[in-house]
Length: 576
Image (cartoon, rainbow, N blue to C red; front, side, top):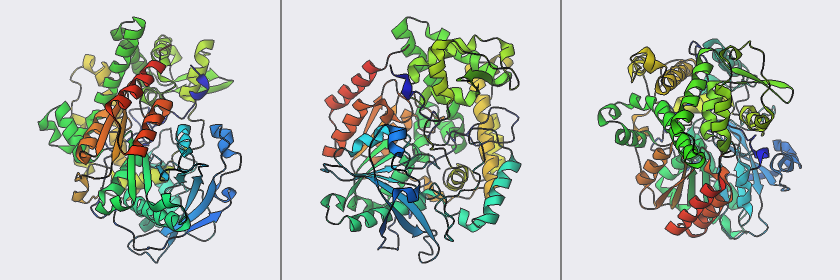
């Protein structure tokens, strides 16, 4: 296999911002089981501004150099770039404006509707796609990339910026205290945006922005019949944005087909899936959803161990035990420092867990890596311990695991908190929910606490409480949500829902939630689960790309086409 692709960012699109110490006050963390889609009934309604304009600009004006895609994606494409102005507050459409950056990869042989790519996060910059394979979709159609509000290049031209650029110095993968987040917010509030303006960064407003983008492109490319409608491709958090768009019945007039990759489901959809997996009694309380990260992560580890065991003849129990031992050491003693390419990098629990389901190229190495790392002496673990030099055969995959990302598409911290806290948190009274969470499925003995379930429970419990406290700091009080935002809906738009077998609630996107979403949407939706893949199914390459092309061309895929794609992925992915 080719190791050069291993270094893709292993972080989850939903927001892989982690805590590695149980005593940390709070951290930016994966909101699995916490972040739940918040579709207000009115959110997808057409904006009042009906004459938006696509303003062509040099790509350098939006931070894209002529060599950018060649350097980062090994692609020679030079996009057509432009800007789109949208209302900062759709309740006051003639007021302040945001400027969103747009890059269009023009097809030399356009035959189908343009494909509009919705990046994950919240906080990912869509001009810099998480997975380079998405650029291959420009063969037969234009591919439209957009920096969603709050994620673009910061400008200082007297206009309200398109992005929340404060908090730039925050380590998105480190531990944050309440004081750090408070300082981050206060710095931004004082210097760039008001407290009221923080409320403009929501999934509902982003859905309105996408409709305005469609209108602007339709107008600008009026001579191209393909722009009468667009297709949508949403990945991770981007699926919640796509679903918010689809919620509006009028979306069928301008959205042709939709692909949801690693789906962040609506809250009541999650509850239904949860009740089928656990119990209706627990599912009746939405806080029960909070314990699913540990369950689904444990499930992913067992699936990975079973697959590895069948292929190599190794005991699956042995593989699971290696994971448990490594997680226990990382949790109890601290991170493991490694010297890679002359630099010291640290492996912590969060990096290990996201690697289970966050990178298709790394997955074949995981059982072997975990076996090797778990065998390191206890006194090698800890923040201040000297780094170990790994065996040569492990250098490349470990570099990929710990790289933090080949691409400069790191999540914008302030956008993450603004969107997540106003749209996804599943609680209103934080104190009450913290009390419930700490009691839910709590390990009852020391032995259970040191089991795989107990270790995962402890890790995700602290992260969940950290998110609750984080949003209280960011929003200055308890979270308030419209009670109607949990409502499921059906759609007549043909939709392909893709899921990876190893994906789990660490990203908020386990396969079962994708399946439940397809059932919610109705008979125009088709669910496909791919073996030996995790978060961002499109990273599995040509088999998934081919299935996506078939769906976008016809609006459906056959059983044989699905089976062929699944088998191709399975045959390609072999353990080391």
